[in-house]
Length: 360
Ligand SMILES: Cc1ncc(COP(=O)(O)O)c(C=O)c1O
Image (cartoon, rainbow, N blue to C red; front, top):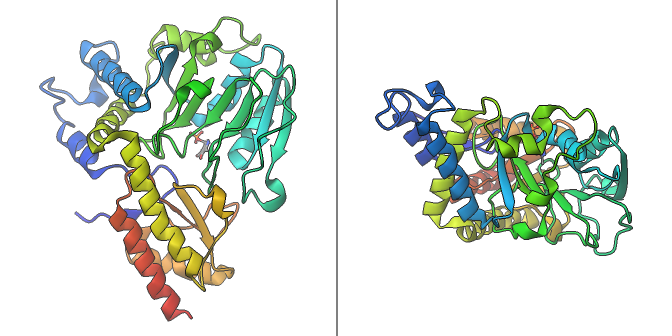
């Protein structure tokens, strides 16, 4: 067996320990004589899997009792519509556009009401987070929306925006469980799990209970109504059972590793290795304003497209894969999620040093 260091932005690297465990349980999950893939979502065995997954996530994030945890399908992108459908009572929402994913959410919301772009960093290719301390929040806004970590551009909100009392909704797809968060500051925290948690095909949405009502926009599909899913404990229809199971394993792995404080420490240590190198390199340079740098997604360039391509190709040959930047921005991007070991980042930096010497 040969494993590479996988810097993919998602689907992405998972803890080897978890992969081995699920492989061992593939044919016979804990004496049931079947794989979780083959198991009824209405069975007691599966109910235990989903209940434990929820409880472990609640423990990790210290989720208050007045929040529901929903395991939903349709990816993070489906929530771009579900959020306005469920929350737009006044049909007004404010969006802070700091990247492609926030922009997509903003554009989707325009279908359902008045979505206001109250701040943006598009003027400088989304390379920074705008000052959000005193934004023109709409008096009748149903919520203020952010994408907390910008997977493509590698920026992160280090401070939450001042929403002036309005409900904050955050897409945390690419920073989910990477550090502790204060859930009580948000109305909704949601994210696709395929980056920092599990296999693709599911989104976890943590929603304050008062936002889960029957008062949704007319025409909201039953499946997209938060109340449908909350009332059914995420089992209104057949959920992504196998994904819930793997995510549950990752939650247990995170607890064993020491929880989110420890993940933050490790993630800061890993990111520092890469950023410190970038800051002194003559060949490579980071593309993000230093104070807004993400711990999870690190974009960098040489400034020469052919050199970028050569780097990506040679890195792949050295077992450092998926370093090509997003198709919309080019360059390189190293995603260094929770499951990327420090050794992977060290191997990347060693390779970059060697490449720099060879191509000086
Ligand atoms: C921050 C962010 N939001 C949303 C998405 C879209 O997720 P999905 O493919 O699950 O719809 C992605 C990535 O793929 C992302 O990085």
